[in-house]
Image (cartoon, rainbow, N blue to C red; front, side, top):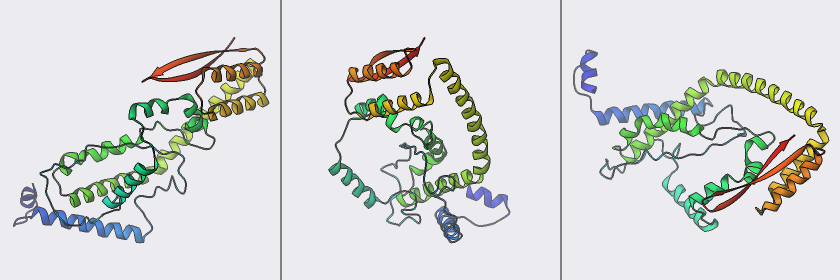
Length: 272
């Protein structure tokens, strides 16, 4: 392909693939240093700094290297910039093994969907936090996966440099479109908030619930979520207390779910 581009643009001579790639990485390294000097850090989001409201975590297993891939002792130019160094990962894994108890994935997945866990940790129930789909990292993975076929044959250093450059390009595109994206989301969220506030006021008027009763209700649910037990009587007692707050307008139903052997109590409230 490089030879074809040479002929197309009227140049003569051969282009060394290895030299071309190395020159490209070195050029990008210089651009990276210039950006750092200009206080334009590619891995710092201006929309999330200094504190993030939501964090999405996911994995990408498409960027493995084949056993017969190129071998080289050369150090990556962007070593430790985006992909953590091997020694740092090893220390972290050892720390996890020595300080935590391992739980199988299926049990952990079931526990993560317990309603008490949702009340305590979901962004929908936390004041001042962001609510996301939790799949935002998949968008980044889809972008990085464009080079998954190529990185399988690269050396370890080349793979690290290429993935780092792709991640920086994604961040640059995000920052360039950040103003437009945030403006649209702000308008969309503002309209949704107004609609939900209207629905809340209508429901309060329909059920004759005061603001004080609503606050007591929220406090009772939070206190219930803080308990460590998962007893069916807990949900029933909470529903009974909320029913008293609504002056007899409400009724409750406790639904028992079973996921991978884990019992889960969900509280369903309804009003006449």
